[in-house]
Length: 291
Image 1 (tube, one colour):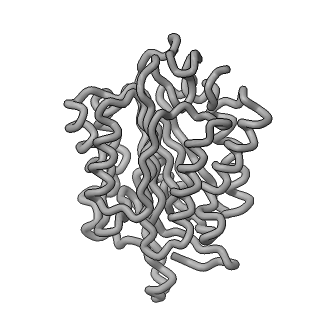
Image 2 (cartoon, rainbow, N blue to C red):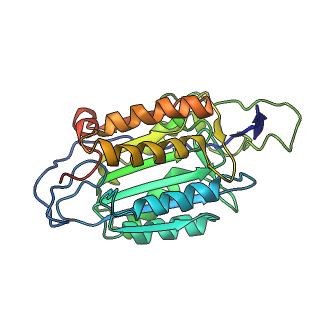
């Protein structure tokens, strides 16, 4: 973790996943009489959100989780999720069990993590973990029935490594153990170069469609703005969602992502990246429920 111009930077690894597939969409839903599109995409199925955080000294992580939970429960915004599970001091057991339970009968799973990390790994309260462990827990709970759609958003350093590129990020060594809390690469992941392949192998077994939005590129740290605002990415995302829900209900997933990138660059100095499969279909869908 670095302190730059009064802004804490998260040397977190997280970046997440996303590798997608091709699956059908559309159709009518029994959710409020609307046709579900965008993030909460299913044909009248169950849409759940799992919000996991692990501070390890980052003051903004609890804020990220608590504020996102409020956002998902906001009936005026209505993102279309039927259930929200949260934990702002999660161990790996907490993460795996909560995710598996929530995903067991879900059609759409929204999976979010805020905390430290590095290329290909994330840091829970007890140890580092890979997304493969999360995926395996979900598939076991579902008896290998793929989710219709998996949405992943990560607020962590180098999170773009799951979206673009296989080259490990070598953390800077400034000799300051207090300011730098990046997970060492050695032994953290058996093949950190293949972080993308690690997630990609679950295409068609873990999910049919996928969208990932990561807080920074594969070469960047991500900023923690402190206890009041939380992570720069999550703070920007929440602001964009709230503003758009009030003034632009026709905003697409791509437009929300673009606006979040612009605001994150302004307040945090890093650039969110995303990927989707099937790309044109998902990115062109409305972010909010159709009225």
